[in-house]
Structure formats: C-alpha cells, structure tokens
Length: 563
Image (tube, rainbow, N blue to C red):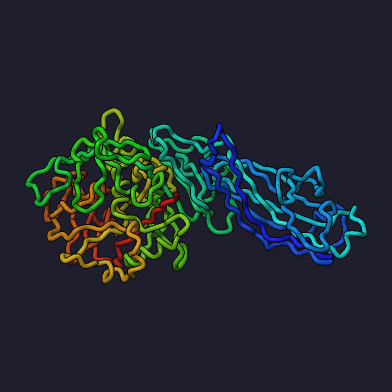
C-alpha cells in the first residue's frame, strides 16, 4: 500500500468588502516548507495514538502585510487514475488538534477539486506561525483499501480581517513596514529590548519615539510579545525613517560658490519643518514643488516651499530602515549592527557596497546613500528629533570619541545613562547612533569626471552590472573646488548647510559649524559624520571628500528599502 503526501502550495482568496469592490488591500502569505513531503510506503491502518507519533510535514506561514488575516488549512486531494484510496479511509491531524477523517461533512462543497478543511487560524500583521500535518490510514479502513494510492496537497487560503498594524495619524501612511525576519521591538529607558506587538502603539514620532526593529541571529526562535530579547540573540538593529517632505529653508538653496567671511551659527536655533506622508509634492500645488533629484537642480523650488525628500523616491514605499549603529562584524565576514562592538573599518567602498547589498537582498539592503544620510540629518534637526516643539531650539547629537559603536563620553550604550542617550538622533534609546564621530562613513554617492567619466569603476572596482541600477547610488556633477557647493542635491544636507566659512583652515557650514568639504577630482566620493579624533568640527551635518580606499578611520552603514 502506498500513501503519497505531495508538496504544499499557497492559494489566496479575496472577498468583496462592498458591492463590486474586491478587498485586495493586502493579502500576502509567505509559506516555507520546513520538511519534505511525506511518502508513506507500506502504510497500514492505525489508531490516533499511533498516528500522532508518525513523521510530520512541517511548514511555516507568515503574514507579510500590515493587516491581519484569517486563514484556513486545507487538504486538496489529487486525482489518481487507478487504485485511488477512498478519502474516508484517511486520517489527518493538524498540530495537536484531534484527528479528522476525510468524510463528506469535512468536504468543502464549493470547491471543484476534492478539498477538505483541516484547521483554521489567525495571523496578526507580520506574524509567523508554524504548523505540522500528520496523515495516516484510519483504523476503520477495510480490506478494500489495500494496494491503493492517495495523493494530496496542503493549501492555505487567507482572507483579510479587521486586525491592522498600528498606525500613527501623524505619519499619514508612512508607517513602518516589517520585512521578513524583522521583529518589532521597544527599547526601555534602561536599554532593555522587548518584543513589541505591531498592532499596538510601539512608536510615537510625535513624542520622539522612533520605530525600532531587530533581526535575530540564525536559529534563534522569535520571542512572544512582551518578552525580553537577550542581546546575544540579536544580530542587527534598525530604525525607521518615515517618508516626509520638508520646507526649504536655505535662502540660496545651496548654490554657494565661495566662502563667506562671517557666518551666523544656525544650529542651536533652527528646526527644519517636516511633514510626513506618502504623497509626493509637485509643481502646481500650493507652496509645493516637484523634487529636483539631479545634482545642482532647483526646478521651481524656493525657500518656504514644501518638497518631498529625495531619499524616498528611488525605492518608493513608506520610508527606509537605517542601521541603528555603524556596521560591525561578528566573525571574519558576517555583518552585524549592534552596540558596544568595534565598527568594521579598513574596508573599501566597493567592498562596503557589495557586503551591504548581499546582506539582506530580500529587504533591498544597500550601502547608505548621501541623500539617505540627509534624510536622517533633517529629521534629527526637527521637532521629531533633537529640537524642542515649543521653542524650536535644538541640541546637538553628542559625539562618539571611540570606534566602539553606541558610545559617548566613555559611557557604553548598555550603560543605561542619560549621557549615552544624548548620542542618539532623538535624545533617547529609540534613535540612531554614531552619526557624530565614531568612524567616518563613506556613502554611496560620487562625483562625475569633468568630461563625464565615471570614477566609480576605477575607485571602487565595481562592475558595470553593480552600477546598472541607479537607485543604489547618488551621482553628482563635476566639482572644480572643495568650496563649490552648488552641485548639491537638495535634501542631501550638504549645500543647504550654508553659508560656508573657513576657520583655522577648515571649511565649515552654518549648521553646528560642522566641517564641509565637497568632493573633487582627487577624492570624488562623499564621507559623512566625521571621525573620533575630530571633536569640535564634526557632527551629523559633516561631509568630506573620500577616495574609496580602505582607511583605518572609515566604516559604513546599511539601509533597508522594505516594500
């Protein structure tokens, strides 16, 4: 006797919400087979107690959407031309449920294919569950079941329910999207990480509490909501930057071609106005302009107009996940993004690019771009980051004077002190660290040659295939002088940082008087944030020129463009 239990596959079902409107807002279930299909040869009738101990077909299902789903586990019987074992002779057990036999009362009448309901369940947004199915010949099967064949498939059907991921009205739809393997977390004032329920309030940008998520080490079982997550179980931390527009604030729109003799430090008093939302600004709308994403471009933009930040246009989606700390490695090569470890330095830009892109390709991981750094810098310099909502006065992100991630004032990240939290973009544990000091961070942005030649090929050793997809890097026009800031991309936190001046042979910008050096032919790439030995002239708005080579004081940062 042969009983064959073949591979599993997924089906989706949509149902009308209202007349002639199909509810397809978000029905997306991912299914992963943990074990191979069952092939039960020389099977014989057995009792439930025995059948419950047989090998199981194991699989996982994950809700990949921000809305909940109700699902049904079904067994679809395949047609067998000859010697088909009667379905009523088959017993099936889902997990620890009682066995069912495939009798007429379990049959789904509306199905054209012979199908039986064997269980149901509910998945919250981004929740994952594991199941196992056991199948055997029921003890009541008669002699007529001998020398027969039974084949079937597991089918998952899902319909949207009313459970939805938490959404902060302030963000106007730019809420976090959790990719596969990402776990929503909250970080307490003591630095302790707990698993958050994404259907409840786990972030609040209106109160400077940014959304955090972690990726667990391989083999670590995902904890339950409310459970503490041990630091040893965490591979990487990420922080959500929601899509937003900002009000242009620089009177020259960054078109500076020389240094000013004097400058007023705008840093402590100027908050950049931010407006969250998914809609792109465009010409013709009141007080809006279409984002001119090219180097040196201005379009119809002017001071006082709202412009969608360019960091959110290349990949689309609700926003970006940014590495909470500078990147490090847990062994000779594997990436981790954690506090209180040494940042990964002495690495070329080309290697950083490749490692970043290969880190989590399903989540569109990539080396942070210059415009993406700008998006973090502007959000930091707002009432949702380091600026007071009532006065608009801002405080600067504290410096990291070491190559140890998350550190400030000789205080480790896990020290649980107020001093340490001042090194984040929010002034609390929910923000991003190491943007001021630590190591310099070359970003994926480069200047074209004077005749249009591409420096990236020679400087980074990247292939034309690597550079084919332009969403992974920013490109700048040729710059003749380190003082020529007009080739900025609006929003990248370079040219708009003016007016610029020279102090003790150091070019500085108006925002926090941070160092401001534009790329030139000899060093045509951007590097951000400054290094640990540059206290007093660096910060979140710092930018410098870089040649793409491996340097002792340079590391890199990863971003995720989860859709």
